[in-house]
Image (cartoon, rainbow, N blue to C red):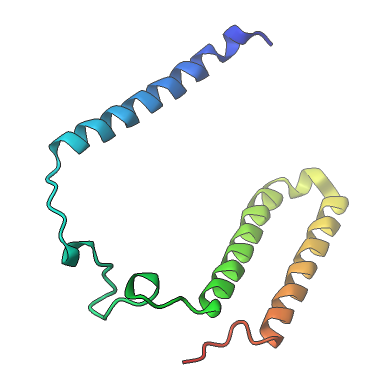
Length: 121
């Protein structure tokens, strides 16, 4: 492979970066700028703001739940390509994914038993 084969990709990336930069620059020139304290406060569905902005801290429970959500979303990202090529990878690929899912289920059961999925008020 030569460097000339990657020229169209490089041009496309440069074009995307140029268009994105130009869009951000022009919008920064045209938008109104009128910041005031009430406008800069976080909005939480009509409730008083909670968390860092309100001077408090988020509970650890929020972070644990977010990490669990990310873990199981990543699992889903691995399941779709595996399902597409299952016939080509055969029994070895099936067993490997089965072990992967069993390990994730063990982690899920551990989190469940430790109460990470319980929401305390």
